[in-house]
Image (cartoon, rainbow over all chains, first blue to last red; front, side):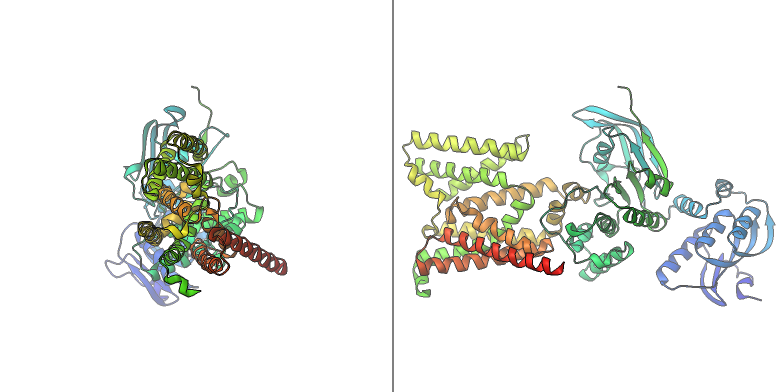
Length: 342
Length: 267
């Protein structure tokens, strides 16, 4: 009998083997053992080709996470039919002691009609607060200049780690909204709470901001200087260099480290800006028209990076855009700012 | 020629040239990166007003020039308008007031306009002390605050999002520039202030890929220009500021040609 099929020792909730070698175990409850496994796999930096897991209970969410973690065979003591369907569709070999139609929990109900493993994975991580992103809650917010409101939000809520695309006509107030979030201007009325705190009480560097850039400047600034702008000053030099290096690598921009930022293409600049936010450990990412000056290939690379952010660090992402392709590619929730009567 | 350094005015000018060659180009980077060229012109006019005021009231020139420039800076910062507009208004106002003072107190225009050429060999120890304080302040400010300065140069909105106190830093830099312009006017004069403030930065821009190297190269080029200009002045008995300016422009042209040849070869 394969090792992963052996009964779990009392108190253990998850065993994971690579072939016959036990590489990970956990005694946490709900879906947390699987999130711990995700971190373990990420930190180990090794590629495991034959992952087999033994878990106590398997619903549709657990099945989706296992598929995302590239587990080939899984044994559940108790599995739901909905989980079985998803595992079968994705060619994961399933073993189980007993099977029921569905687990009696909210999480199972939430994903009963969702077949996209990526979406289930993202949503469950948001629900479990596994990302670094913070909740954004906006209520009765009027934004504008000189006490004259140009746009009013009744209510807008973005869960920590979730993403939102904001679209709207020119002049409707999208940039004013960004300026309000960045505290460059004060709201006229209403509240913006981030992680249940007013924005003026937030830690500095919480928000990473990437703006559209039209012009190059004649004065040099190196990519390394741009990326290290938001770095924690208390870190040692070695830690700083490691963070800069890993951030640039994640954004596939390490080869640009010594280049002058203003000599880069639009796509390269966006990669560097994302690395800056990564280095800053921004919990909320605001991108203002990120694809404005990008060619098709750069746009596609940016989309891949944004998706990786969404699945990896999971900051809360707010994108202001006119770009329909970007909207269609990302398939994220959209908020449309529409003309309002005075 | 080195024996000339034993003469006090020449020795003081030599020390002043070394200090200013380091600090003025650093301020020049701030002027160019923050797009404060109009402000610099306003400050130069502020120096003329300060000079006229000092002569009219028979007061020491440099402290009065610094005081007037600080007032001009504060007015420009506080007036709710674009800096370019405020600077233009300040230019007109200071020159108008300077003319009025010269007329009212019978100040010979020649004396006041002496500031246009500077007087490096007539510096007092007080002037040197102020210059040394400015140099140390600028260097310490840059070292201790480098990341914040880079982020402000890069983009003020992004700097704000990083928690940088943009307005505080901006105002501090403007005050440093005001001091620098006042000192530079005394040292090399209004007409050639750019020889030490701006030209070394423009030369450094041609060879730098990072803000850090821009600051370092600016100071290095400022130092090379000043020292070579100083000794050329002594050897050929030429005016200092004009000599530095001519050498700076020549160096800028040479470096630009080399840079263009390199770019062409790369293509």
